[in-house]
Image (cartoon, rainbow, N blue to C red; front, side):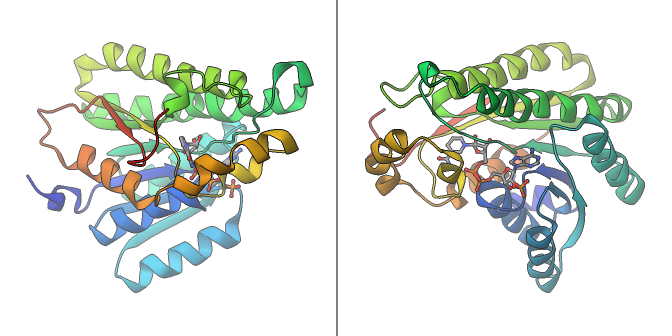
Length: 250
Ligand code: NDP
């Protein structure tokens, strides 16, 4: 099976305005997916739609804050109204304001939990009735290597907790929806060149991250892994992929 298996598939991507989400939208758009993109920054989504339009792709954009359940539902409802089905949900929106717990950044903890965990659950909840009816579908959740272990000395306790949670939710969901032939993939990237480090406000953490950021690889790497998982025959369920820069040890 080749990437042509992506042609015509309806793919929803949250957090599609930059980084991994944007790279995935452009890659899947070139492969003929029918896209539905959500994020808070509409100007960015409009520019991406223009870029995909020029290559002949089909794109719907919807302003979506994944911490707001009604907005996530609207993104999914609009997708079904426009395309009649949903083949793939890429749960990608996320933030990473790293800091040590004793810095007491309560608002940042709430923000991470609301975006990285509740946002993922809201989107799964919004697509699952449609996918059950179709008896097909594919939920791809972007976790992190930080969802496999807690990196030492980088203030990752809460961020890692959110990404461990994404993996737990994905695995539980995978088991529950097997009767409906819904596929579930966890993608865990290492250091990828995106705007994510901009969400770190702690100056000490920012400084300590520099070495890792210097090794970061293109978000196209993750886009290609997503395309690989989607393009497998329906009988295959690719459940987990880890991607790190070749030089990244931890
Ligand atoms: P970016 O900061 O470049 O992209 C994050 C995206 O999430 C943006 O499009 C942003 O859009 C969106 N987003 C953030 N908050 C919300 C919200 N409340 N509602 C809707 N969209 C939101 O970072 P990445 O591309 O790196 O991040 C994508 C995913 O990859 C995240 O889940 C991240 O945790 C994960 N990841 C990234 C790694 C890396 O090294 N870069 C490593 C491991 C995992 P907008 O602001 O317009 O809403």
